[in-house]
Figure 1 (cartoon, rainbow, N blue to C red):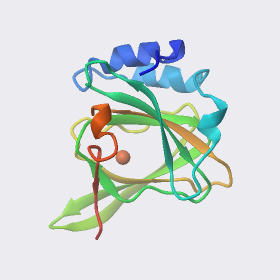
Figure 2: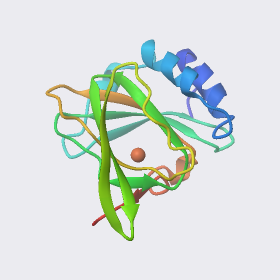
Figure 3: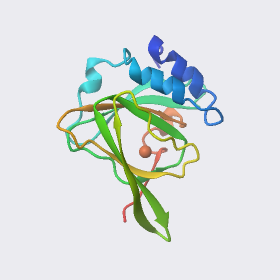
Figure 4: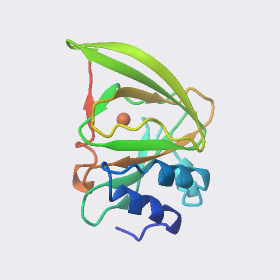
Amino acid sequence: MSPIHPMLAPLAQAARHMPYADCAAALRAALKAPGWLRPEHRVGDPTGYMRHLLYVDPQNHFVITAITWLPGQASPVHGHQVWCAYGVAEGELTEERFRESYGRLTPVRTSVYQAGEVAEHDLEGKSIHRVSNRTPGTIVSLHLYGVSAERLTTGINRIFTA
Ligand SMILES: [Fe+2]
C-alpha cells in the first residue's frame, strides 16, 4: 500500500488504538482539513456509492477509505461485522438509524451530517443504518473500518434484506 497522506497520519495513529480509545478528535481534524482529498475522490460511480481505499494498516487492524456518493445514492440498510467510525469531508450526508427486534426493523432516528462533522460511531458492531445522499451534489465521506484489506468488500457489512 502506498504511504499515507501526511494529513491522515494522526488519524491512522489514533485508529491503532481502536476500538478501545476513541478516534473522534483525529477524525474530526481530518474532516475539517481535508487536504488528503484528491480530485478523483469526487468522481463517483453512477451504479452505486464508490469506495476509495486511502490507507491499509500494515498490521491489518483497520483500513481508511473515502466513499463518494452521487446524488440519490444510498447504502443498503446494514449492520457491521467490525467496528467503524466515519464523518463527512464534503457535502451533507443523511443517516437513518434502525432498531432490530424479532427480525423486524424499526426506524429510530434520522440525522444529517455536514462537512466536518463526525457521525455516531459503531464500536461494537451493533448499529443498523442506511446512509444516503439526498442532495443535488456529490458527497465525500471518510470511514475507518476495523477490517483487513483482504476482507474489505465482504467483511464489513451485514445487509438486511427485509
Ligand atoms: Fe455502515
